[in-house]
Length: 236
Image (cartoon, rainbow, N blue to C red; front, side, top):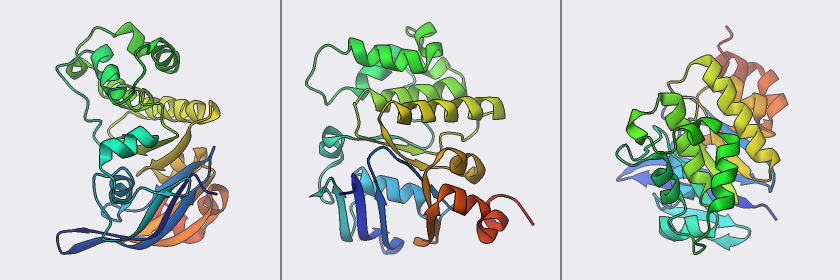
């Protein structure tokens, strides 16, 4: 059984159909990436999974349990956490307070091990633990957004455009950490505009075009696919 499965999911913004019957699976332990141009439906897919949007038809299941109609906080409690596009950290809260917000829905009171894990992955956050989130650099804010999502102890981590606006050296660092997170046992569903770097860390991938999946294959096969190379990897 897949950890996460979308079956024939259609999602709308008002009368505009953003997802047109998409089906995909993410197995436990995988990194799966969704690639496609702006407006293809990648972020909408993540928002539908996390409960921020409700599908008009189709189902989203987590280990076989239908979560399609559940509110976002219940889906988070079941083990789905999202690091959103644009980071959306709390600028007036400290790094520690932002991380605590990630654990808001959990019942445990001792978060020491969780803080230790985040600070091991992101030593820079430990150095800035009492600093306001809004004063961090873009790269540090991205680290904080991912760390906050990890504080929810997710079974699957949804990452939306983690490289957006970052210098190449920071992109390399963020994706090394994504690999480390996965190696530690967290399943990842990754939306990323930079298809080349996404396919370099993923096991499998799906290509979205205007709300439909047009290709699904191993990351290696997609990276060598002529259509993908021309459309998304910048080759003529």
